[in-house]
Length: 220
Image (tube, rainbow, N blue to C red; front, side, top):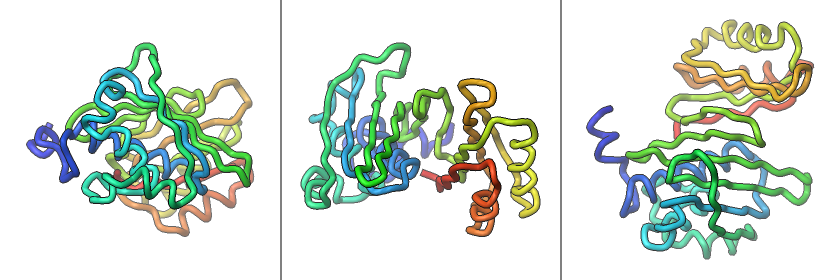
């Protein structure tokens, strides 16, 4: 662990775990969802619930959902700014099982597309975060490297197609996780890379017949 991780990131305080980490969780959720957020349900667990008001955890997550970074002065006014943008939101307490004390469950909705996203994420210290669940599937997503989240048909050779496309652009894969709920169902692929992919990479992945969704996540 570096001295920067111990001290925490540049941020609107007071806490790297309860404020900066919370903002990053909200921003990660926004990047994963990609579409306009019409409504957000934010459920706070453990010490996140205990410090929601005192450390601004609630405002930080809403600010992150608006796209704000941990050092953005607008985090303090995130409730008002969200309402001005037409984003409805609610904050609740929840007791989750076997998770880090600083954990939030976030559910996002887009009315026009009848679309939603649900994730569980934790702030694990020094402003670092870890997403542990997306739409009911167990994952491990940190946002510390450029990352692709790809939904694809679970069939033989599909992961090979994805890695071949990345290889054709000389993109080195640092870490890769593949998930599925059932054989032959929709698979989920999380790929952490050394370098940021350009739009041509994204377009080529999206052209593949059995790839349903490609999300690029920059370093959070």
